[in-house]
Structures are given as structure tokens and as C-alpha cells.
Image (cartoon, rainbow, N blue to C red; front, side, top):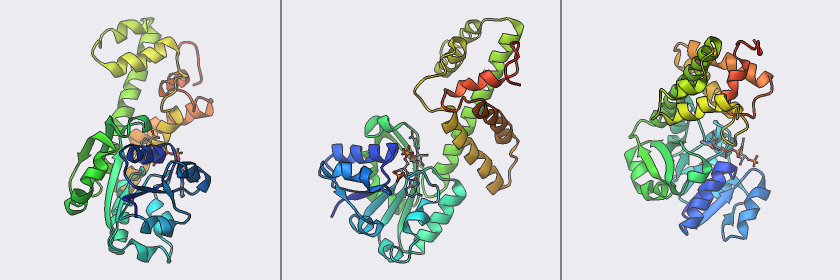
Length: 289
Ligand code: NAP
């Protein structure tokens, strides 16, 4: 019997597995493409050949896959459902608030406990002091696994009973990032159109690391950095659009920003730094309109 099962061994799932390995926690892993999981077998990690085997291997299962509907994708088969009884499922894949509420209700119907966590750091930060996760769900579910989750990072922020709180705050945080991007892009274009060097604008914010870095990226044209790409940001923008539809709120902001992202991706900048959006803003050089 292991202490925890990890479903998904992509960049993030693998980082979760490594963080537990580092702590010597008995671990089972499952991945849709089994080859990725087998690479860990040599390192004393149990590799489950089926979803059923993976669930029964541990009292707690963590999901981290690129599928917001993964609770149902993985566990919605008739032979799997009964195995959920009495187990704790922690969903760390990025999901919308509506999805998380539906997953809770579905799992409660199968007598399983459920927590949702939004990972707010890169894979390299998990298992370090910079590992940052917002997590929510019933306190009676959280308490017994608090130590287990604590191994994933120094910044675990438990938000209480409302299962959708972590997902909602994750989206709200993302929204502020898009607001910053748009403000910095337009400010840079204002400077460009009036012949003011970007460095003069940057110098107005000596303590703002984001303006220093992002507007500095435009100033230097260093769009080929190895970081979250413009396409990755666009995927999270799609979530903001969908949340607005689900909740029936105004979608003008994500739709407007989305138009600019689509233009940039069409122009071939999807794999570049998000500030490559600047290259599709209409400006003096008559770049893509
Ligand atoms: P990734 O490297 O692209 O890996 C994707 C993983 O999801 C693979 O293990 C893949 O299995 C699995 N998968 C996708 N669809 C599946 C399905 N329908 N059924 C079963 N398995 C499926 O992605 P990642 O970076 O690990 O991201 C995983 C989650 O973490 C996402 O929700 C992402 O938003 C979130 N996240 C990632 C980061 C980051 O910096 N990477 C940061 C915060 C949050 P195969 O190997 O079989 O393809």
C-alpha cells in the first residue's frame, strides 16, 4: 500500500511525484501513456497498470493532467466508481469553478472526499519553499492530508470549505495579469507613437519587477525566452471566457484581450514570450494591424 497515487506524469505530475520521492513517501503512479510511468519503476515507485489498480493502491489520489474534466474521464467507468468509496481525491489539474462544484457533487455521490487545488508556480518550484498552491474543500477532508500537501511547497494556502474558492481566485489572479499585460502593451505603444524611449517609461517604476521585465522584453525584443509562452497564456484566457459564460457575467474584457492573442498566434508568435503581443499592435512601423 502506498500513501498517495499520482494520476498524470506530464511536467507538473512528474514534479509532484519527484517532490514525494524526495521525502521518501511511498508512491504509486499512473499515466495514460504507460511508458512515462515505467521510467519511474527503476526508482522504487509503484507503477499501476490500470486506473482501478491505481485507486486501490492508496487512500489518497492526486490528479494532475491536462483535462479539466479528468475526474469523470478517469473515474467515470462503471468498474472504477465503486472503488472510490472512502478515498480522498485531490484535483490539481486546472479547472473552472463550475467543473469543480460538479466534481464534488459527483464524488460525494460515490462516498469519496474531494479537494481542489490551483497550482500557482512552475514545476521546478514544487517541493521547495516556492511551491505555491491555493487549495479548497471541506476542513474535515483537508486536515488529514495537510501534511501530505505540505510536502509540495512552502506556500500552501488553504482557503476553507468553498470547493470553488481556489479555482475562482486562480482565475481572478489570471485576470489581473491580463490587465497588466494590456496596460503595459498600450503604454509601450503610446511611448513608441510619441517617440519616447521605453527605458524612460521603465525608469518610472524602479520597484516594479514585472514592468522592468515585461516592458524590458519589448525594449530589447527578447521574445524568445524559455518561460510560459503566449499560447500557454491564451489557454488560460479561454478559461476566463468560459467562466464568464458559465457565470453569466460580462465577457467584454477576456473577449477583447482574446482577439489580440488570436492575431498574435496567427502571426506565428505562439511559442514566444507573451509580450510578443506588441508585435501585432498597430504602430508607427505599420506592423500587423
Ligand atoms: P503536460 O506536461 O502537457 O502533461 C499533460 C499530462 O496530462 C500528461 O500526463 C497526459 O498524458 C495527461 N492527459 C491529458 N489529457 C488526458 C486525459 N484525457 N486522460 C488522461 N491523461 C491525460 O501538462 P502539465 O504541465 O503537466 O499540466 C498538467 C496540469 O497542471 C494542467 O491542468 C495545467 O494547467 C496545470 N498546471 C501546469 C503548470 C505548468 O507550469 N506546467 C502550472 C500550473 C498548473 P499522456 O502522457 O498520456 O499524454
